[in-house]
Length: 307
Ligand SMILES: Cc1cc2nc3c(=O)[nH]c(=O)nc-3n(C[C@H](O)[C@H](O)[C@H](O)COP(=O)(O)O)c2cc1C
Image 1 (tube, rainbow, N blue to C red):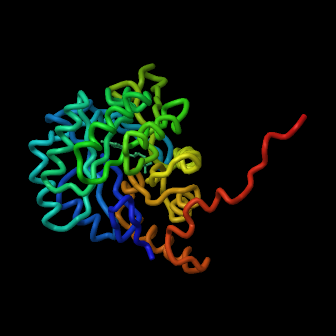
Image 2: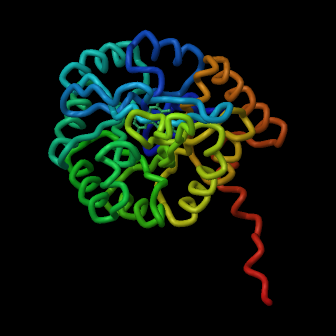
Image 3: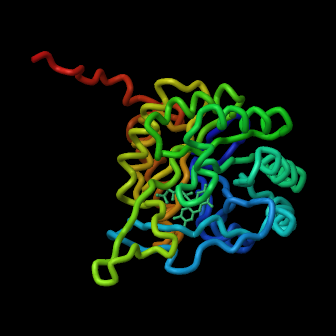
């Protein structure tokens, strides 16, 4: 009942770990899978080790809502391939999130991840506190990068979208045209917090990306808009903290979901989401998640009223 298929990737639960959450070690990933996740997305991995920004790099600004600028700190693909191999030896469905400094370096990292055993690649073109965000705000750059990777990869390719744009649909269509097998919507929302006593931004980098509870309605609207124009699957991501919010994403048009910030409360949320989704389907006489995908679009919304 909870199984989903995202462009050939079969998962036993629609709930996937979002990129950058809870590190990249095999032991943590195993615990997450045992708790009932359908797949893991790794932290974004680049061509070489990178430290990321100094602390403070993550703060809670409202209950359940965080601002971060970790700055894509990661071990680099050469050091990470052994981790991918260990995860795959244990049969954990694995999406490797990658980034690079040029299109060729994105490709190189993605090919190495594929060779090490990744089941799918997600490209990060959307982190609001790193250079990669410049790709995700430009439809031509998004198309070129997606096309290059799609031509060379044999596993599914997902594009993680940047919400910090005027028209997310235009970028998503460029990714689809480039051959993407799905999009992830959304990455964090560019934001800032200033300390009134020191009169400075609190994060060491100045600004960062907003995640958690506050961004959920924004992410639902992006998925709703994307569903109207895309043919490829949408993986909904942003602020999920209970099963109702997970269902909202499906009704808006998502095929699958990613969760991130809520995991700071512990792993019990995974079971609560799986149980809540299953019960909702049963009570409402649906057999599969695909039966409720996009159903909110059947409701005719009111057009702009006349004067
Ligand atoms: C501390 C932190 C680190 C993150 N690192 C990455 C990353 O490396 N790559 C990426 O694509 N997204 C990254 N994200 C964004 C998440 O994957 C996700 O898109 C976002 O947090 C919204 O989901 P949530 O509200 O469930 O956390 C990060 C988010 C947080 C909070």
